[in-house]
Every structure is written in structure tokens, then in C-alpha cells.
Length: 431
Image (tube, rainbow, N blue to C red; front, side, top):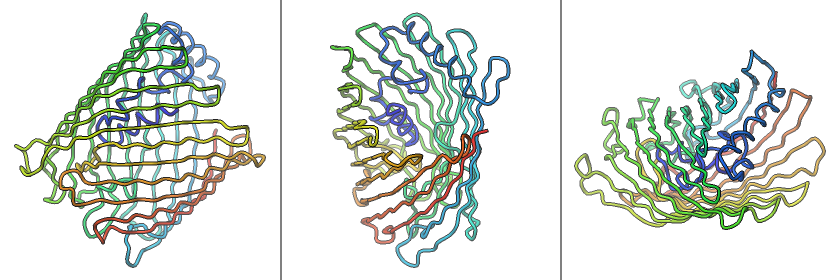
């Protein structure tokens, strides 16, 4: 799960960030489970993936020949006391979010399979109708896995439509923090070459990102992303190696204002990574290296200079006992939001999960993030967040959730300081 999360994070930011580049495989979902990555050969990997796929078909609620489908739907009702993320005169509103999820697994042959995942919904505001928006959750898309000898090849196309508010500081326009929806689509191919004691992964992705709210004046963009990683196993439970990557970013000048216009740029990185299974209940990963972000001075803003520095990402997951497990991540990265404003970010996130109440699951995340805008070094922010989510399985197919989230942001720009409280009640039904 953690590698899948890191990949999705990189894609969501619009370029292959060092965190995404460091992942030694393209996605956990592509091989039907992280444990399969420890198998020594790609042939064994294919067999294990196929066996797991066959054993999981009974979980799906519709079988059309060899094609298995799973459908679910849900409804969430949120109350957000500051929908525009403003410091003065915050405005609250109720938001209704119906959603529909579909997953498909098709074992095309004994060693090839096609997977589809769509998680989409609609946000309907009770009073602020101008904020109504369709959304498609990250992770939606097609994935085709090909197993051949010592190679595992993945072809994919992922799409998301997100409402960027406090999750995307660079989309917050001067004089307010209006929600700015963006469409992002990433298509590409990744390959893993398994040499028993060594693993080599390489791949290419083309990403497009499109601002859906034309009134925000945000530029559309595209990027070409390449990566190459190689690791060795000094022991079965340890994988360590080197990583490198290159991203080429291009922006459309149409729709961009002076404040949001950004030059084309390239970013490259080189570093090392290590993953370790310390015990049956404890996993850790460390990525570190050097990255350089170079804007094209011939396109715009000739005064903008190159930015460079170290990147670091640490992740640990542990199951302490049957009642408590957690994940802890911390790091620094230089990355790009879809609207063309690159940031130098420091992040810490702790995600504890509690299971001491029968039939209930409880999660209490905490996080902190500090960011500085790279081009001009004049805009920075600190964001603090905390939340609690309580889930309960009501019936075999119906589940519910109640959550509260607190977000506070302080910024070098006075009009971008805010506090936000969000309460949500949700129901989900698996057909």
C-alpha cells in the first residue's frame, strides 16, 4: 500500500517527484499485493498474482464470463465552516457528495490481466452553487499487466478530477482561496526486470493537467517523465539501490495571468533508497538524494533562477498489536502543483489506527507541512492538521463513517491565513 500511495502522490503533483521516482515498483495494485514483490523471479510473481486474482474473484458481485466486477455506492454529507478558506468573515455550507465506485478484473490470459477502477462522485453545495463539481478520485483508470520471463510490464492510464483547496496551496489565488478544480491524466508504461538478487525498474509517463475553473487564470500543462531505479538484495528482507529521474514540464500561456504564469522547466534527481522488513509487523523505507529544478529562461520571467537541494523521505509502518497500528512519514521534496507554482516542502504525517472497540475502526491522523515558493522565495506557509474518523460496519454490505477534520494555515500573505473545520457523515453500500 505504501508504494502505491507514493506513486499516486507523485502523479497527483503533475511530475515524477523524487518520492515517486524512489518507488522501486510501479504500483502495489499492479502485482496484486506488496508481499508478491518479495518473490525472487518475475515468473513466480506472475503465478502468484494469477493465483491471488483467481481466489479473489468470489469477492466480486458480478461475473461476466472471465470478467469480474465489483460495484459500490455511497453518500457523504459534509459541513465545512469555511468553504472559501478566508481569514475574515468565513462562510459555512453543507456539501452533499454522492459517489459510485466500480472495479473490474479480467484475466486476459494466464499471465496477462486487465484492471479497471473508477471512483467518481459529485459535490453539491447547498448555498454556494458555483462550487458544485464532479470529482474522480486518484487511482481511477486502466492498468494492463504483462508477464514475460524475468520481466513484468505495466501499461496504464490514470485520471483524476480533484477540488484543490487546502490540499493545493499554489491554486489559492491572491485575495482569496477559491476552490479550483483540476483534471489530471497520466498515461505510460513501467517495467520491472527481476534478476533474483537484483531488481531494475524503468518507465515513462506523459501527464496532462487542465484547470477546469477558467476564472482562476491557471495555466494548463503537460510533462514528460522518465525514471530508472536499480536495487540489490543483500538479504531477502532488504532491498537497497540507486535511483534517477527526469521530468520535462511545459505550460500553456492561454488562461494564465501574470501572477500564475510560469516558465517551462525541467527537473532531475539522483539518489539512493532502501526498504527493509524489520519484522513481520514492521516495515521501513528511506529515500535520499539531490534534485535540481531548472526553469526555462527563454519562455518567461527571465529573472527566475535554478533551484536545487536534497530530498528525503522516510516511511515506517508498524502493527504494534491487534488493537493498534500506525504509519509515520517525514521528508523534504521539491515538487510542482498543476498550476505551475513549484514549492520546496517539508512534511510530517502520523496516521494511527485504533481497533479496541468491537465493530468500530478509529483513525486519528496528525500532520504538518511547511512550503516555500521556489521561484521568488517570497511566499511561504505552515499548515497544521488533525482529525478523527470513526467507522462501523452496519451490515455485511453497508458501512458508515463519522469524521472531523481541523486545518489551520499561516502564510506570508495575510489574505491566505485561515482556519477550517469539516464534519462529515458517510454511508457506503457494496452491492
